[in-house]
Every structure is written in C-alpha cells, then in structure tokens.
Length: 172
View 1 (cartoon, helix red, strand yellow):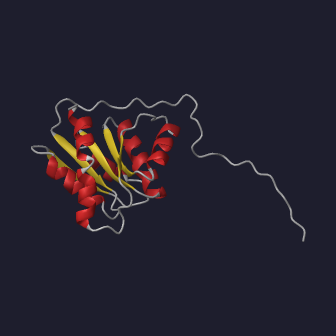
View 2: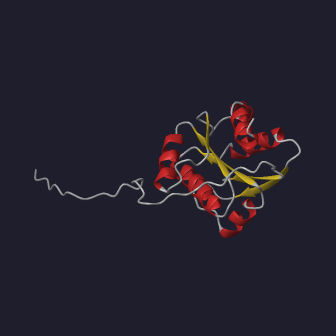
View 3: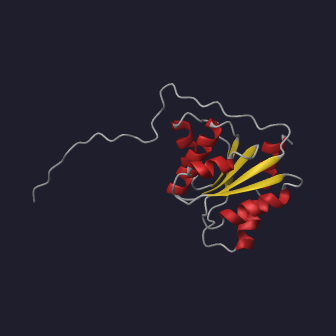
C-alpha cells in the first residue's frame, strides 16, 4: 500500500487577534428595558421566560432569530431596543458561535450584553470572544445538557443562574 503524506498549514479560527480589542459597554445603573434574544434552540425560550419572570418592573423586549445562524439586521435592531440584551442559548458549536458573534455585534452597536451558554461550551465561547477582541464578554454558564429536557428541568437549571445574572445587572 502506498500512502501519500501531504503537509498543510491550517489556520486556527481562534488565533490570537492582533491589536483587536473591543471595549465592552457598561451595564447602565438605571435599566428600564431588557432585550431577551432567543436563538430558538430547545430550552432557550424557557430560560428567557424564567429570567423575565424574575426581572420585576422591567420592560421586556422579545427578539428571536434562527439557531446556528447570524441575526439579521432587523433582528439585531430589535435587540438594541433594550438597555441590555440577554442572549440564549449556546449549547452546541454553531449556536454558541452565533450567540457570541451576535453579542459582539450588539456590543459594537452600544448595547451591553450577557450571553448564556452551557458549561460544556462556555470555554469555546470565551475563546471565541477573545479571538474577536472581546476577552471580557459577559458569559453565564448554565448546566448542560438542556436539549431534550422537560421545561421544568430547564427552569430549575435557570433558577441556579439568576443570582449571577442579577449581580451582573444590578451590581448586587
């Protein structure tokens, strides 16, 4: 048997950025409205509805986009209607990629963001954010798996991240 060995140079998609640095927007001290950006992954709606139920007296703006794809200009514009945007859910490779990239796009538009990713994909999410100059992008980890879980189970996992979310939002 004859085997040809060919060397190829492969580019690391998460390589160190040269000189890129995104300064994140501060969470406002007075939040009037929060945009909940649902990427339609199973469980994302439950996570965001549970969060909304714990954000008393805040206007909720719901925005939705397809999973595993970038948000359209219209979808991003809708998400900018809030003082802060919470994006969910990164729990696989493509979904995590687009949650993070859409969060970066919103940050560039002046909207502070919080991304929710499963703990199995949070390391990838942080590396991706860093590769795009957003090393300190706000990412909250939720317990994996979520897909295939009953709404009550997803809700229970969400309750566990509410204190961290409130700490980020309200500095409490």
